[in-house]
Amino acid sequence: MMAVDRLLEIIEEIAAGRYSNDIMELTDENQPEPVRTIAEAMGLMMVKVEARDYRLELMVKDLEELNEKIRQSTIHAVSAMAHALAARDAYTEGHAERVAGLAVRIARELGVEDEEVESVRLGGILHDIGKIGFSDRLFSPHEAKNPPDMVKEILCHPSTGVEILQALDFLGPALNYVHCHHERPDGKGYPRQLMDKEIPLGAKILAVADAFDAMTTDRPYQKGKPTGVALGILKKHAGTKWDRDCVAAFEAVMRLSL
Image (cartoon, rainbow, N blue to C red):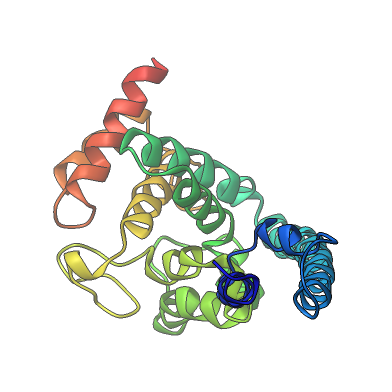
């Protein structure tokens, strides 16, 4: 093969992004001009391109690390808001952390992937963030039956939570779990009355964990129920109020805890 033909072949390979050291064989002093000069120029160009690509890779890595730091800082800030919310009501203090912990265990029992488990955990921490705008009387001791205006506030908290968090797009699925954690398989939940298949699994998991913690925690209007009683209620309404598979997974988790 003539040197010019070989040079054109190698240049076509380089143009297609397939770099190799083949160009160097044409930089030998025995190669004719201008083949040698062009080959040397192409070799130098390849070195510069590879150096640029390496610098870009380093920049991308630095940006990814910076983005992760910003993400974690923002999550910590929003979680601090959730903790501040809990501090307004001594009866529900620690509720978000307990729900997140239970939800993670349920998700793992269901075989959920690790990345998705983290979304469930975040959803648990932030699921009640929409209550940040509640009036103080909702956090004050009151009878079990809430007046209509208070009920309206309560029913809005999942949507309010989404409004607070929607700019944090890195929350991914967790944002939808916050929105849907009070939906029910029978379509009688809130705020959108979604039916079973319309509700994401993460939200179904949170619903079970949230209900269990609410039932077993002392409130101004009720004493916390024993674990067995609360589990019995979950099982009784599995398939209507709560997802059947999530309740079964939760029961398995509880058995492991005994």
